Image 1 (tube, helix red, strand yellow):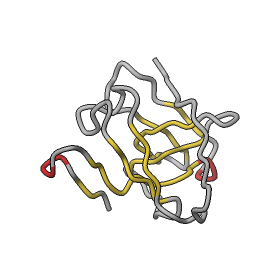
Image 2 (cartoon, one colour):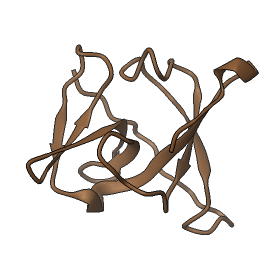
Image 3 (cartoon, rainbow, N blue to C red):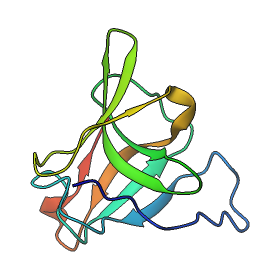
Length: 113
């Protein structure tokens, strides 16, 4: 099953390169990112194989997945196998890199490089 987020990012007074936060809406990235946790996205973050990304699909749909690069092809992979791995056209579809997981407990906070 494939599920995308039906949201729009309103930058308001924020610059395009400023960090922003979103809440995870499904269980596709568990156990690393639980449903309801907050992720911090860096729109100007370094995109590399294996990093967690926010990607733009057709139209304004956004999806949170792990980026896999294999033989010059780009895939968005969920942590749970019950969700589909999607192929994307290229890195131009990446809207940002997840740099932190936040939660109500300090022990749940984690930074990603």
